[in-house]
Length: 275
Image 1: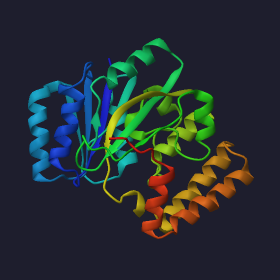
Image 2: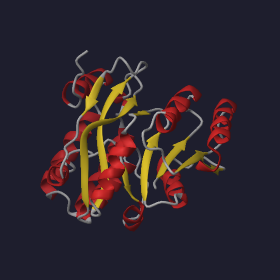
Image 3: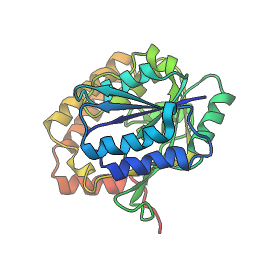
Image 4: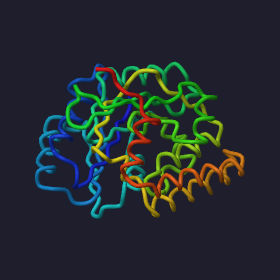
């Protein structure tokens, strides 16, 4: 038995939400025991109508948590996590498509390894058409490689992860860190010495906004990078000198023109998909 945790806000498109729900229910070889859907503030009429259809279909399996105000992804996930009834929780993003055996593969791994705390996998990215992928984000597989990788960038594809609720709550759950709540959480789990792992399989087709990566720039992002630097030093994740150098490099990227930043991202941080 396991929970699926989803947070949704007003900017989501109903057709994307419906495709996501079909992928985690209609098309799954192992269906979730419950789906906890957090409405992060007021939604559009169209989204409420879509949710109502799924609520009618799934009955008690779909548990809806309504938040009066938009509190952001991290806080919304924390509230949802507290309402999840089962120890294993799978994170789902409302605009992504989970592969049909995602949950079956992940739950088998947790059942086979009681020390495993976070398990993710690979993603294939697409813009509009899932049959025309634009790239892949490949992350390391085993515990030692992931710990090393985490010094430079997030060791997981956020939308693929499943984890043990008790251990996530133990390290403080999600904490406010603009655009990096997940990375922040992963570093705290790693600092505790817990076992983490990625599967070599693509678990999710991740919908991306064309040009999204090129817009990840500006002083707000640099402030977030500084918070990341401070966290690494506090947790003793990385040598302070190396951490400072990496902060300067990452901050320099945040000040680049969007066109150049997009090219660098697509060239060095994503694997091309051969069609």
